[in-house]
Amino acid sequence: MQDVGGRLYLKVMNIEFFDFSIERAKMLYPDLDNDDLILEIAFLYDRTVKEGSQVPILDLAKELEWAPEEVGDAVESAMILKYLTEPKRGVIGAKITNKALKKLKLFGKHKV
Image: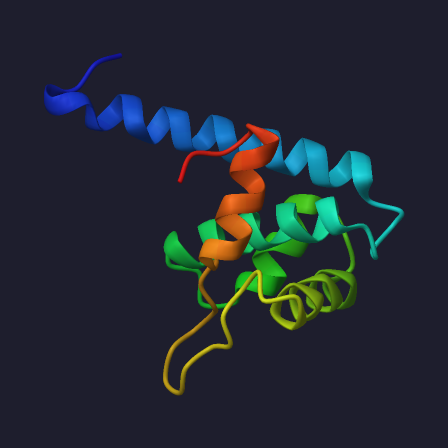
């Protein structure tokens, strides 16, 4: 599977990072106060928003097989820790911050 300009390759790589983050979040799941878990949720939430989700918390909860309240709490914690920005008026979702991207890069699991 190839595409002119490598677009398809980039899409496949993003899916692999997304799948890795989902598996890592599921592995860290019971401890909702874990900083690593909050970082993974911030990354996954940002990707879900960028994919155009109108209800990112519900979509992410379905993907992770968690209760929406738990995902909402993790996203709220990510905002408090400044891993996600506060959503702006009229915009659905938040964006991942440079602080979170730098920490994720230290783990060597995600591309900035």
